[in-house]
Figure 1: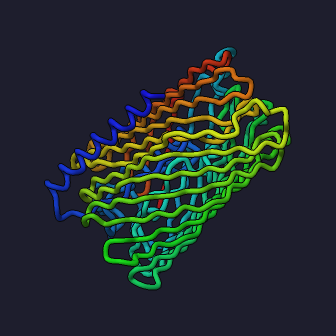
Figure 2 (figure 1 turned 90 degrees about the horizontal axis):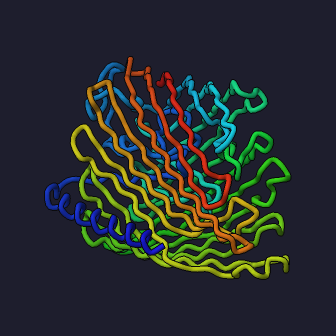
Figure 3 (figure 1 turned 45 degrees about the vertical axis):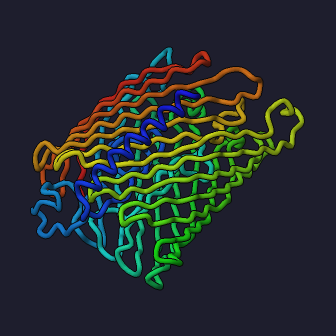
Length: 473
């Protein structure tokens, strides 16, 4: 645990040093917001590559500008991205082969997955990029492992609606065929120069990742989740802003065998922001979230966070958000059989989100998080998670782009019986994309997914290769 603290603090210091250097080199620039991430699936490239959740990729942080004619290059001189408009739509066809469909360490089953992915989104005023990305995470209190990144307020009113569908066909077993999808919405209103109000929602119909401890061939762990948020920002003085938000997270699994995870989270967060300079903000933040389980199989719990942090808006291509503090979790047990479990737990938590435009053609994204989360197994009270993601994006030519995503997650479970369970998961995914036309894209990728666990039978190694084509307007 001490090594995890040292790693996070070292990254924080290095990123801070880089941000200060960038400020000195480009004092007149305006920064983009930090990127958001989620689970290892969400952390892979978001360009219709067969992943489950949406997550911001490095290129989504780039400066927005009208595309103009359909064949004209975009704001950074290449063809990736949407036109600057109100209504956008896309459809993707993807095929991928894997050597270990169920992520098991014995009796691996290969499979060819065919995926059709239509999506549509509307925004007013018109934009070439999604104004917000919300990456759900079922075990995180409040439904999001990472803080929601700040997003630009480009007009007095912002309306955003989006929907997506992923139909999946499995060669190994047709009973696995299913559809996942969801919708997202944002309404933001700025009644005055110092006040911004917003309401957002993210609904997801999905399925947990296959492995022995989660979804299996017999128990697919299909779920519905919904994140709702409402809040506002009030700049009550020239250098001080107060931010208040309410959040509700609803999680419900289809099968009764999984009802121990069904819960509703309610809470709020508030922060006081001090603008030290046009490019540097310091803030103090408090969050409270109550996790209320439908059944008595898991304990309800109160989650309190007190953090201090900083936002460096160094340049138009470089930004950093870092915060650290103390997390306290108090558990309420209805069943005396759990009397041996601790009724409270606390410790350090931290989060870092940053993006660095290394060159005109390359960018680097960093996300890392350490905190106590809800359990995804009936044998554990909770899990303490250290998650980190590094994503590198490079544009080789105007029409060829490559990116590499590396995700690491360490989960230390608080088992009810006192036994040890620690899972280490590595996920590596390189991808190459080629723009055939302004509206037609081809991508090829491979991925390596590896888990090592102290609990026997949970280890696995899975390799996947895929190819896809996507049309967008």
